[in-house]
Length: 143
View 1 (cartoon, helix red, strand yellow):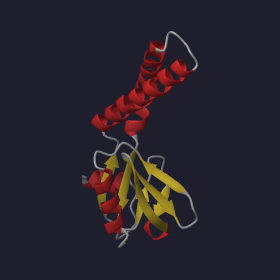
View 2: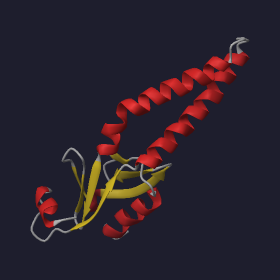
View 3: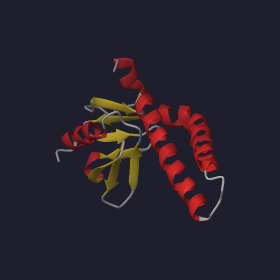
């Protein structure tokens, strides 16, 4: 990251930017395709179990719903960037999580989830490699 971008983050004296994490477009699309497929199976199965002769509508409805949702929120979700420094994580809306307040970092599908000592949870969604994101945060916090 350039020096100008580091200044834009308003880092404290002695604080260094280690890495930045944004949502990955390819991962975002793959996850939505999986959700649409899973939804198609579940909804079509439910329609068949109810005796509906038009169970194929479950496939159409699931793909349409997940597709519209995916297009609608893509810009927002993929625009979120978290910045990891040697002291804290700085979130997309300026929220700050001190590394010393992170209890653990979990991987949930394509997301890295931070759990704080107070039980608050934060998600870095649609990571290309969520385990690498987890490892980078764990290294920074000395875990």
